[in-house]
Length: 342
Ligand code: NAD
Image 1 (spheres, rainbow, N blue to C red):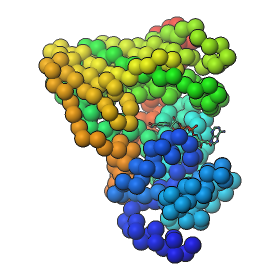
Image 2: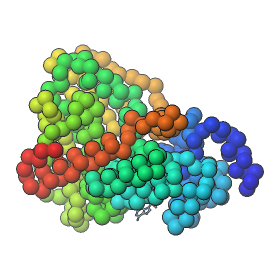
Image 3: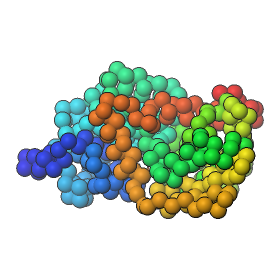
Image 4: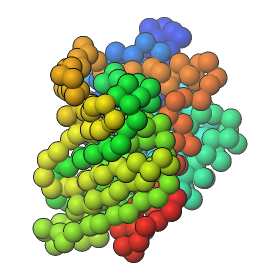
């Protein structure tokens, strides 16, 4: 085992070690494979509550036993110099606790979106980061995707003039029985999971934050499935210049797009929010094309580099908190039917 550990350290000289906490669909399907491509960080450890997952992960990714933790001995990760960064990939309700414990163990933390269930939880996470003097970043992968970087450039540099309207939709069916349908774990419905991408897109393409929101939900199609979360949500965000963004998210149907309508033309991504296969078009017939890349590898490398350079990442905890604050306002608007000022 010593040999294995030494080998990993040697092979990954100069790279920061990441421990994935929660070995579900996203950790196993996207993050672990992406960590095979990263230049500034590598998969050094895992934290799991399911012992049956260990042999596969250990063998596939050459993870030494001393870098494998469960939820009970998680805090002892503080004694492990191989682990520099904790990456929390658990159900939303567990983000705050495992992030705070990660900081208490003296590690940097990347936390998946949405950052937490409430602004209060976000504040605790940011306070823990400050107390530990370690960086907190949110897993907002699209900030590192070249298609979205094009949208940011076209929007913020007003290449088609001032944006007059943005329409964004992310609709995707959910599976019965998963934690996403249980408000205790998810904190809410598709807005927490999918709509957050529309919300983010509007903000980074305009370079502005909403000043007020309105929202409407609809009767659910399946009363057994959607007991305490919304199935479909429409919401509108008023931006400081008066521009209105119209957004929709749902756990039924299928749509995945963001379109900005500006004074001199429009530009859009459809699909917009997938891991790959995005497509961009503009009013003047341009088709945006970029060579395929791993958004997650780029995201984790960029965050690792910012940590090495002792700088906050471009997706800091404060950004996650901002979005949770807007989400809280959208849910309030949905419940009350009123325009909610942020
Ligand atoms: P998942 O259900 O596939 O995995 C969740 C993991 O948490 C599993 O390994 C499960 O065993 C573990 N877990 C521990 N305690 C649990 C409990 N009490 N109930 C349920 N699971 C428990 O979910 P996922 O799709 O991997 O999502 C995990 C997180 O990652 C979520 O916050 C989600 O929003 C986020 N995510 C982000 C992206 C992205 O593109 N950035 C994509 C997918 C998921």
